[in-house]
Amino acid sequence: MLDYFFTPRSIAVLGASNDPLKLGYEVFKNLKEYGGKVYPVNIKDEVVQGVKAYKNVKNIPEDVDLAVIIVPKRFVKQALIDCGEKGVKGAIIITAGFGEMGEEGKREERELVEIAHKYGMRIIGPNCVGVMDTHSNMNATFIMNAKKGSVAFISQSGALGAGIVYKTIKEDIGFSKFISVGNMADVDFADLMEYLAEDNNSKSIALYIEGIKNGKKFMEIAKKVSKKKPIITL
View 1 (cartoon, rainbow, N blue to C red):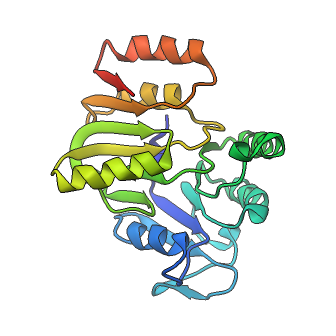
View 2: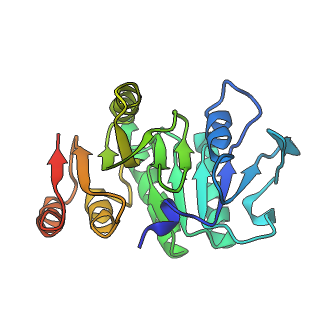
View 3: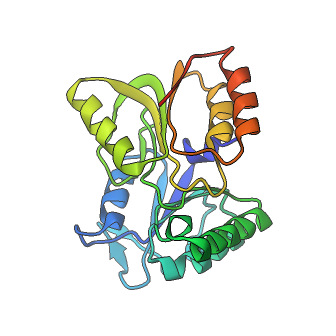
């Protein structure tokens, strides 16, 4: 199951920042409103937005379910290794510059997946906006909180996904979950549909798709899930 992406007991934000111009500032600010424990990881600052910071995720004294990684690309690999050694279950990699940049980026992306699976960890991303669960009040993104609703929205495009969230806020329309999958190096549409099929807060599933790597897997899961709840694809 992928519960640790939506209702984690504890979250580490690698790249949490005091600088309002950085994405790490917005993500950590959003997550401070979450009911679970949230730990900032910053190699320079001892305190981030009023919360004690740690120089490495491995220095956090308690277990960490979910890591949100927003460090510069050159540090992502080591950050993921550190998360694996810490026993983190899931990682949302917001950092871009991987598979979308060409063959070398795709190779680096595959390496991230190999590292994650070595430690039994799953990845959403890289190159994504993040994940939001309105029912648990967890917003691991750098955008505004969506309104609470019953539609789970999965978007391959971060820009379009964020735009739709902003539009629905103005129109007073809500989502149960918003998931920006980015490059889908690991967790993909099929994995998420299978999870959402059992999510009582999600009565229907909306997908914005730009491309699918494993069409057979997608169709098999979609056929099974559509017997339980509607799936809308764009």
